[in-house]
Length: 124
Image (tube, rainbow, N blue to C red; front, side, top):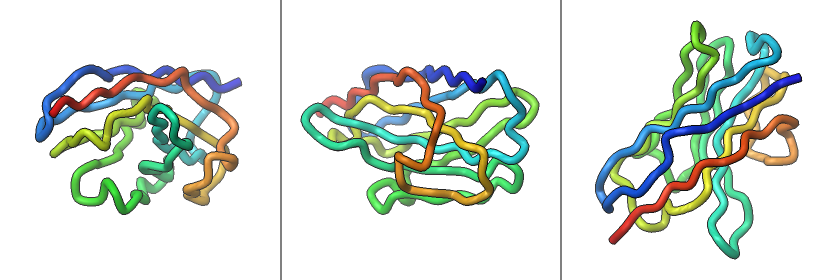
């Protein structure tokens, strides 16, 4: 149906930047919403950001507002997460998620399709 593949994770120093990518395939995403979640060891999965594919409308968690930017490239069926001013609290496995909806949601249960995750480690 829908396949999502994340990439771009790695090790960065505090205050640095990193851009994550999520390539989607299998179905059209013209009416889909896509989001980014993260999960640190011993913690619950946490909402990061989401975007409405058709309009580009976005939603961010308070913890990343002003630092992270979610965007999409329609021609490449790819969603990005630009992360700036990174800090140690951002260390986690980041997951890309998608669902067929025009409603942007912060709840992980709302999304039906998930990528494999990519590790982001921010050193102090």
